[in-house]
Length: 274
Image (cartoon, rainbow, N blue to C red; front, top):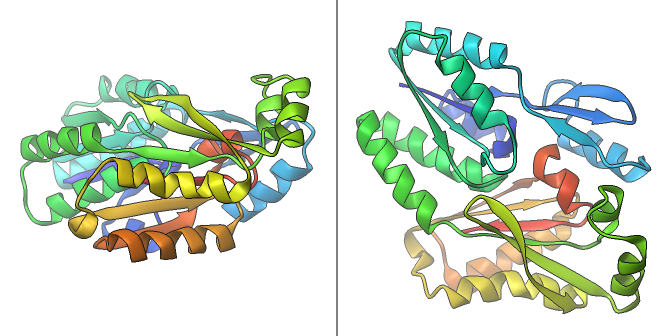
C-alpha cells in the first residue's frame, strides 16, 4: 500500500524515508514570491522570511495534478493508495486530492485528519506502521478514525503579530495583549482552530500545554507525543523534557512547524499533539 500525505504533516525526513511516504508539497507566497514547501523553501528559511515580511505569507493547496501523478504511480506500483491530509476545515488540500482521485482508476482512499502539523503527521505515521505490519486498508481506516477522534492538538502563541498581519486581530487588541503580556492558547476542535484560553506570561502559557495533557487523564506510556515549534527550539526542548518527566510517553517526536500552520502560529509558537 502506498501512503500519500501533504507537506503540512511536519514529519521528520527520516520517518518519511523509512516508510517511503509520498509528500505532496503545498505552495507559499511571501512578499509576492512563490515557493514550494520543502522544495525551494525549508522551515528555517520560512521563519526568517516570515519575520521580515510586513504581510502574512499566503499558503495554498497543491494542484490536483500533483495528486494525480502520485496516485497513478501509487496504484501502478502498489495497487492500493491511502492519502492522508490536513483538515478540510483549514485548507482545500483535501478537496484537491478528491478531485484527483476521481480521475484515477484504482483503489484510492482520501482521509481527512481534521488536524494540522504533527497532528497530521502522527496519523500518517500510524497508518504507515500498520501498513508495514500488513494490516488491511479497511482496518487501517477504522484505526485512524478512532485515533483521530481521540487526538488533541493544543498550541501556545507567543505573539499576536501574525494574527494582526492576517487581519484577524486589530492592532489595538495586540497592543493590549502586549501591554499585559497575554499569551493565547488555541486548540483544534473538529478540524477548526479555536481559542481555549488567554494567560498572562510566557511561563504560564507554555505550562498550559502540559496542564491540558493532565486534564485528559490519559495513560501516555504507550503513546507517541508530537511537538512542533516556530523557531523556538529551546522552549520546545524544555517542553519535551517536562512531558517526559511528567507523563513518560513511549516516544516524543520534536520537529519544526512548517509554513501551513506556522504562518498563523507565528514566531515562538509551540504545538503539542497527544
